Image 1 (cartoon, rainbow, N blue to C red):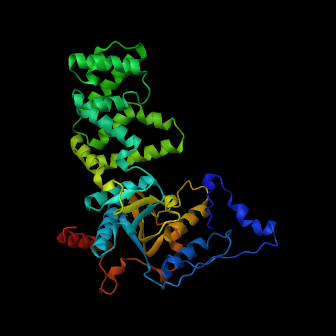
Image 2: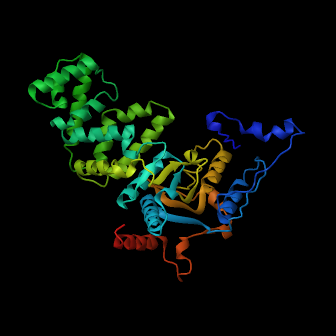
Image 3: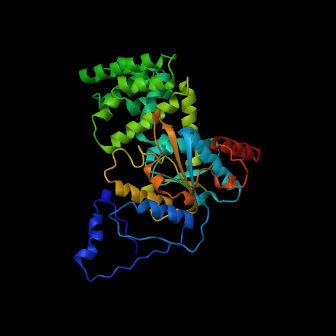
Length: 405
């Protein structure tokens, strides 16, 4: 029987570790043979978890042979990292690996966004396990609704966006007030936003909603700004950011991070319609559930699972372990769990810059013995002078394009 001890669920791992002291006559049986992973993966995992000085000593071994070294790759930017992972997944699928035998496992849900977009562009089918896709997250949908409203304030097609965000944060708009606006809009054949100034509302709601209308119209008209800048202004001037800042929950912090990710994407666009088309594409079929799909999931979700090929992005000290990690040993255990999900091949990646901030490779990578790691793709071995990682994945992409993949 296997027990997962998670402090974030209220468990106390010290009870297990102190069991033999409390009951000195108890016998300990170590289950050290691993039937899943190859030797290089286990040696790398053992080396990482060995730094947890308080753990009960245990060293896993396997009879499956050494296998391939763990690929430890470093990129400049997260878009480059994501593109490389997507291209390599496509290459392995073209070589006969089933989609569902491949997983991308990350520390936090917010790290899925760049991977999702790269997989969509590479036409790789995927499924997000235990979470919704990036563009289905609440704050992201709210921000897109604000942008949609700003792009077409007088179009009835923006009415659904108005319903979604008109009372976020609270502006005193209840069901009765919204009903009155809906009736006025229908009678005059105008948008809900335009009907605000034509509808008799409570003094509080009228003042707040008219200010909301002014902000939306003024920012929407600033076409000299990128879509990202307009989105940031909308979120700031409508009070949406303040609503999240006033909430000290982890969920609010995650939503702020999601909005920062979305703003980075939106910065690439000058027209709101183009971002909306991109979001619609990203919310479509590639993320639907199904057997023949690459699995995207967090390290916590991955416990107990196994995949032939595992990609582990964003192993950086500001993310894993995070700057606010409450328990470094528990983060180390997660690293151990993540690596040992791989049966045949584990690939760990990091970036020099992520979201405009410089970063350094995770300290956990320093624990992996040189003999168990390789700094390029394993398929490059024996090809003479090794090309850079960047040129290697660009070559892979060209080969896949030629195959129609």
